[in-house]
Amino acid sequence: MSERRRTPRPTKRHPWLRPAGANRADATPRPAPGPQRGEPPTAAADGAPSEADERSVVDAAVYRGGRRVGTPGSLAATYRRLREETGAMAWIGLYRPSEAELLSLAEEFDLHKLAIEDAMEAHQRPKLERYGETLFVVLRAARYLDAPEEVDFGELHVFVGPDFVITVRHGAAPDLSAVRARMESTPELLALGPEAVLYAILDAVVDGYAPVVAGVQNDIDEIETEVFRGDPEVSRRIYELSREMVEFQRATRPLVGMLHGLMAGFDKYGTDEELQRYLRDVADHVTHTSERVDGFRSALTDILAVNATLVTQQQNAEMRALAEAGFEQNEEVKKISAWAAILFAPTLVGTIYGMNFTHMPELHWVLGYPFAILLMAVVCVSLYLIFKRRDWL
Image 1 (cartoon, rainbow, N blue to C red):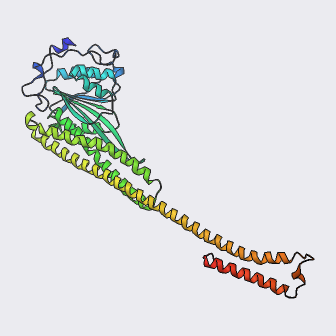
Image 2: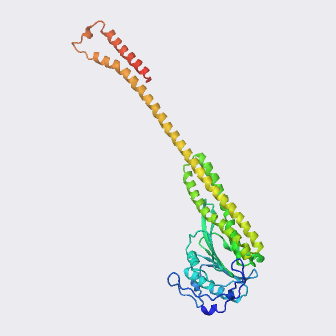
Image 3: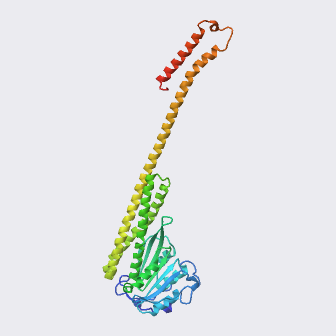
């Protein structure tokens, strides 16, 4: 590795990424870093992993003057071709690479070990960090899945150096093949170097938010309809969408500061004016998207409150209906009990005088029958008046 560093390849200066006057040819040869996490797998003679370890290489190309001049079949071949081409740039795309591949890239391009550790593991927050000549950018891409009506988030790590761009994807989004095709179709933009590739990647990630915003807006419209329709499953849908909006905020909000940080360095690093315009446009889109996401989260909070109010009102209505039904039932029971008591009184009198005992004076009394009828009538009328006064009848 030290032999290779004694004759470093000539490179193109990119003022956005390195201080004025710095040149890789003037740089001190880089020492080969030791293994960061245990012993790496067996590597090829030039420090690159074997072909069996390079299954994660999606595309590796070397560009000069905005045009592809080589498509090496491995990382080792990419390193060699980049050294051979004067003023060239390498663009290496990886999907969930192995530790050996990342360590090989770190050794070849002098990547900082902290950035490599972050790239080995997903679940990093969006950020932009500068390690000497190299920018390390973490982005959270998003895509809307129509069938399950949910947002899927991917993670992208980008290393941008004076003559290289390395992308490490940890998810399905974004589609960097489309970004590469777009850049190759506009060689005048690609000729601006690695910072132009970074712009294209940022633009693709931000543009990918637009379908997500549209899908979420449609979901919120549907949720509002379901809330006022009284759908019992709407609360769960609101909660799940709210969690997705929290993730969406974490993906978009840091981008605003990142892009403003890049724009603040335009004059310092002499960024190309065309790229300045492009990056300002991306920053405007990010700001707009971030504001929309904040609005979505606020709207979902309001919808959840409205739904809770409607559910409470529905529960109160049901309780009131149950109470009214219980009251009506109680009134019916009182009426039935009152009439039962009224009817029980003559039955009791008739039962007593129907026992036919020998020594019952009233049985042989001439006025016994009228007396019994009168007694029954008096008791029934008295009970009726009492129940009527108590509103039982």
